[in-house]
Length: 367
Image (cartoon, rainbow, N blue to C red; front, side):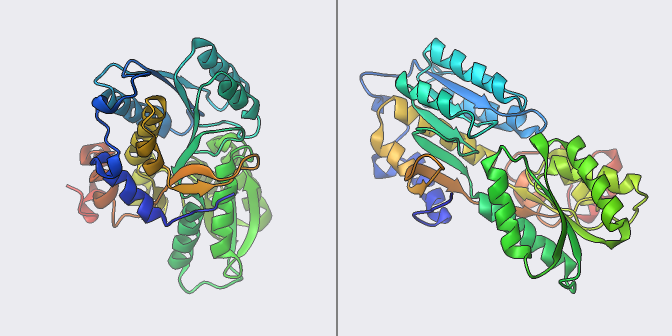
């Protein structure tokens, strides 16, 4: 599914240049097309609430950027489907009926949403796939480099195992089978793990729900034996929490290394306390702001800016050469919390270093 035209780092540079007015890609309201100015409405459809990032980060960041790009005249119509594909279909149709100027869509079910995307296209509404590559005639796509996410998880887990061998048994807790990103995370991880360790059990976890991951992990413990599990590659932080609950319920006190993704606050605290080994930090401000810039540029006819923001190309199961931007990621461990989520303003030290985490925070140099 992934076919990158140029390196990811270059995409980030282009985004930076576009924001500075290079390449003729300014964000000033004076560049607006005479047919559509700043009085516009962008629909934002996000997929779930189990992962706290969407309501807490993506939506407010996106909304603020749209306001900044439109002299506070632009409006964001927001809906979260709470992992319900049918609900998202209804939300998408409502936005089409309301005549929004563009839709930014993070699909619950990338395949099922294709008909809705087509209806939006027929209504003259551009659709930008956000975070997950939706099927159908989308105009552009922005996400993180998803295979790289899995590679980072797998590589970091192997480094932690150190002197391990191919006999070491790993459990893979993959994401939802309806999310195309989950397959890319999984493949990226397997590219690193295969031949290095034994994947003793692998699960595709319905709806990314922590409780489903917990049940899967309990089954894996029963079949493999808690003492024989060398590590767990969990595709995200919420599921990592479920994995930890299952291990602790089985009486495990010396937890194996467990990966994650999204740098959720609870996961950052678990990393400090040693319950979770790592997460993958993805710059939500960069992704959400670039998506807002794409949507506004598309609506206002700023073709040069839009092209500068979408220099990559990817293929979906239904369409090829989709203009895209793929954002790079960082392995988050206790050693770089200050330089990532704190430095980027995602969390304050006071958010992380509550009373229960004062000692590990001090050891990590967080003050």
